[in-house]
Length: 302
Ligand SMILES: [Zn+2]
Ligand SMILES: [Zn+2]
Image (cartoon, rainbow, N blue to C red; front, top):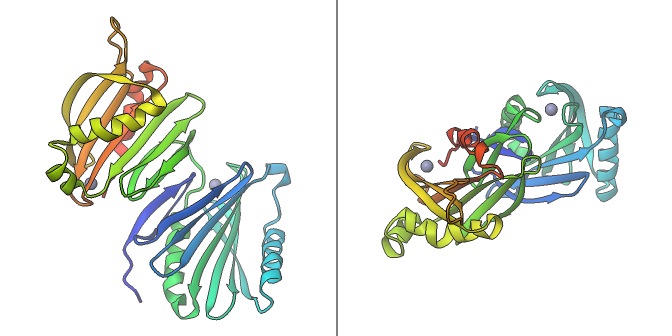
């Protein structure tokens, strides 16, 4: 059996353990439904599909499974399913089946309904027949660690993760060879949290910037200002962030006489991933800053 190094991955309120090399490659988010896909170097491995269904309309699992299989059969006549197994996912009833698509491609299909979030979930786990043992192992890891509801959700952005109150949503993100960023927003409190990074950190610090602070001023601050407006520095100190040393900058909106602070930026270099990283915490009310800062205890970058 393949030796498996795993990590905990979280996205859109679902988190689970999975092989380290699996990456989020795309997602579709509509009002009522959506999905995200994860791939390894070989192929599409995992699709997590969700649909908002009110509790009173929540479907019988077996009917839902049959409906999915019927749809799949329209695309591929030779499709066969093997077995039906009842199980639990984060306390919910779930049903599992093995689907033989076109040889050697197969899929494990897991369906459940989360009463807490009133969402139906479908996991598609793809593999080739000869990998069955490996995928069974992956499947067990996913199911035993899976969380689909709670007061807090884990967000994993290209290997950087943070745990946030469940009201936060990823409203925009960009992954490039330059500055990559994720913007998280709480629509109830109107608070923002930004995660930003640059790869090639050591090269940037050698050739372009004298410090992480210069990088921050040149790229991060400009990017964040587009959303939350211009800020001026009100104080700077050294601090520990996710097992690294970094700096913490307090900023406030431009005002002549009021020295209010309503944004805190954390900036550091992660030598394990060779990235320059920044997290900017920007609540709509300055008084929430103290409380919100605590999310930094959950940040991990390698
Ligand atoms: Zn749930
Ligand atoms: Zn790190």
